[in-house]
Image (cartoon, rainbow, N blue to C red; front, side, top):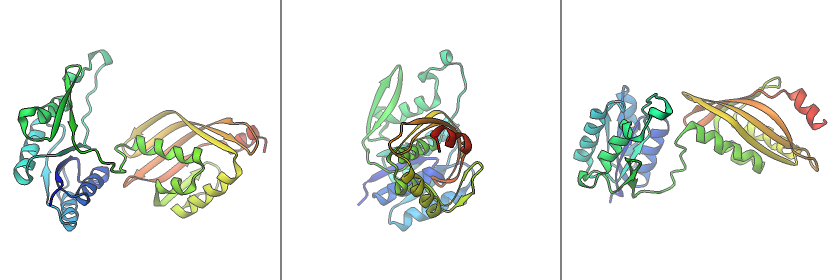
Length: 269
């Protein structure tokens, strides 16, 4: 018995593919869209079918409103009325703040189109916000999948305050490469975990703050303040610039640009 029907925009790779597969494992039949790689989309369809669910891949560019409408109609035709819609693909519109309104975005109009009561596409309701609409869907399970690389890094930093090397490792790719500028390179998830386990034992307290963070493709660049205290010592703020490379939802490369000599001087070691 199916738990329902889901449509994942941008579901052929990366986070979108992970969401599509998790939905299938939770009992949903899944339609997913792709833009230019039908073989990759076909692999995800096969993986979904291997867990006993129905799946279909639909070619649709999320920057084209008519393609989105056609994809919704095709998903409904092949799998039935939608219970879940996941917008993993994005559309970028540039404008000044004063000129940019919710009503003007294609995404708002398309979600309103999908969520309107007479559409019969989505189980849920429409919420009006400043003249635009957002869909309130009935499916609210925790996927344990971050929806953006920005969120992955923000969640990753919570490991440091907890001084939890196992939690830190859960964010890492098996072949991760960690480099603090000027120090030896550390390769592999287990080696990085052991390195930080030793470091955590040297500190009394840690609190990492993000000053600015930017995402470019699968690269996250973060300006951070590492507040570090030795045992029985007080927190000392140390500036750091970090660069992370995300692969398949995990940190595959991690470079810290902390001046180690200056940091040790500040900490009195």
